[in-house]
Length: 242
Image 1 (cartoon, rainbow, N blue to C red):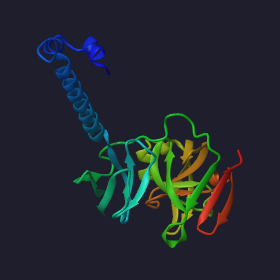
Image 2 (image 1 turned 45 degrees about the vertical axis):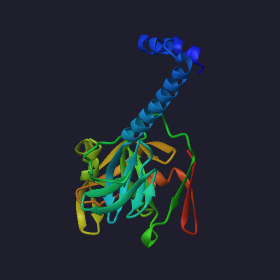
Image 3 (image 1 turned 60 degrees about the vertical axis):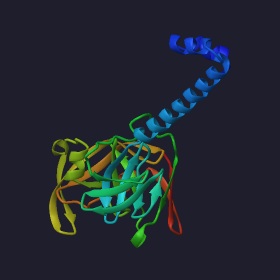
C-alpha cells in the first residue's frame, strides 16, 4: 500500500502525524508498524482458534478431532496438525500444543462431525491394527465413534451407551433375543439414518443395540454388504456398490 493510499483509509490522528515534519517517511514507518502489528494479531488469533476435542480413548490411543477435521487416532508421542498426544488415562488424555499441555476428557467438548453435506465418495481403505483387526472411526447418525470391522455380524452392533450418545430411541425398536459370548441377551433392532466412513456415506443401515456390547461399534454386514470388499495384505478396500 502506498503512502497516499494508506492516508486515504487512515484515521484523522494518523493523517495529522503525516502532515508534520518528515511526514512521508514517518508515514511509511507507521504503515510498516501497522502491517507487523496486524500480522501478529492474525497469528495470535489463529493459535487461539485451534480447538481439540477428545471423542474416545482406546487403550494407549486417543480419538481426537482437531479444528473440526475428520477424527484422528493418535498413539502416545504421535503428532498431527501441531497437536501431540502425551498420554491417556481412563477417559482422559493429555495433549501438547505450542509447548503447553492440556488435559481433555471424553465428551467434555461435544463434537459433531460429518453433518455438513453428504459423503460423495465411493471407496474406503482401512488399515489393520494390532491383532490384525481392521478398524477406524465413523459417524453414526452424525456422532463420531470408533469401530472394528466384523464380517461375522449380521448388522452394525453397538452398546446401549453408544445408542445413548447418539440420542437414539432404541427401546422403540424391534425387541429380540440374540446370542453373544456371554450367552443369550435381549437386544433391539433399529435403523440408523446414516453411517459415514471417510468420504463414503450410506443411509438406512440396520443396527442391533445390546446391553453390554464391545467398547467399539462392530461394523457388520448391514453396512459392509453395500460394498465389494478386497483385502490386500494389511489393507481392506471397500468399493461402494449402491
